[in-house]
Each structure stands twice: as C-alpha cells, then as structure tokens.
Image (cartoon, rainbow, N blue to C red; front, side, top):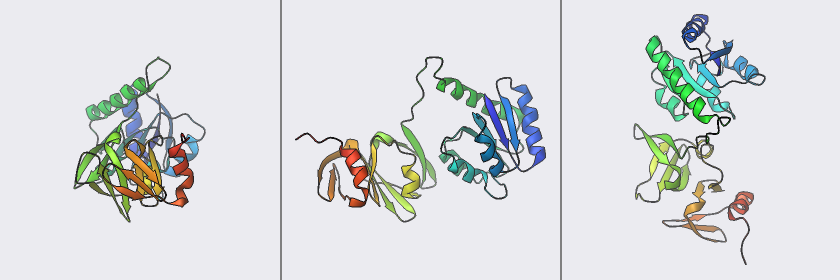
Length: 236
C-alpha cells in the first residue's frame, strides 16, 4: 500500500515517516509540504493512502480532499480538534490529533490496511459498496441510508433531507451541489435547481411535476437531460 505524506512542517513529516518504519505494509511514495505539490505528484504516482495535515498555507487539507475526484483513503494528522466533524463527513479513515501516540497511529494504519485489503478485487472479493453517508445535523453526525431518502430540498446554505418514513426532515448546513456529489448517480436525479429525488420513491410524472409518496415536486426543463435519463425508455 503506497502512501503520500502532506504537511508544511518538516518535523511532522519526519515523525510520520519514522512511525511508518514500524508498519511493513505501507510504503512512503512521497512527501509534500503543500497541497499543490501533492496534487501534482498524485497525477503521476499511484497513491492508496494520504496522511494529510489540515492547517497549511494556500489550499488546506480539507479543501484538498474535497477537490479530489478519485480520492485515496485519508488519515488526517492535525493539531486542531475543531475540524474533526468536517473531516469525518469526508469519510476519512481516521482523524489523529498531534502529538499522536504511536499506538493510536498504528491503529489508524491497520484500519486503512483492512479496508485496502477488503477493496482489492484481485483476490476475488466483492468491492465494498457504501449504502449510506454521514451528515452534520443538530450538532451530531447523523447516518443517512441512501434508500431511505425520498427527496432533498436545497435552501440557500441548507439542505432538507426528507426521509420516506419520517415526518420531520434532517436539516443540515450544506449546499445541494455538495450533497449531490455524495449520492449514487443511478438512483438520485437533480430535477430542479432546488430538488434531488430518489427515483425509487417516484410514483407519477406529469408535465412540470413529479409525485412521490409524500410530496409533489416541480421539475425544470433546465434539467431535461437528467430527467430523460431518469425516465429511460417509456413503454407505450
């Protein structure tokens, strides 16, 4: 398993690399003092795991991870506890606060390796497919199962996640665009600038409207391609 170390403090990079000498299943592929250099290196190197600081000049660690389309596993190693919730919302393997005890560091490495082995298709094992995500709501991390979502409504800086079997939505400070990127594209469709629907809960579609079990939502012609993809071939 190949890893990349990202931290603007040379001593911090030295400490992580020194700790990794006790881990025979992780190889250090490179060290980067900035997120920008890390992005360049990842274009030419196969990286399975990032050990990444958060507070760095320019692009910080959180922004770096959010920018990655094909994201390796991530372990944040930082001096700041306050970003833990935002970090875990990015589905990172672990969040380590400096100074990191060696036993805690080795535990995080083992978690990453276990997931790495589980996801290897060369062994004949089925890759792990997520059926959920976590979102910050009411000062908690709330687990949301994809299949439970009936539709999502965007309200400026907030989203309302309406669940089929709950009368009250889950409200979180996020953009609908950011949330859309976490949803499986085969069942979730953007049908309006303010609405994403789960096609499994759609009952009827008519011009300009889409009906689910608990709501009737607008459809916009601006998302016609997405709507056509959702509908597929119509049986006459």
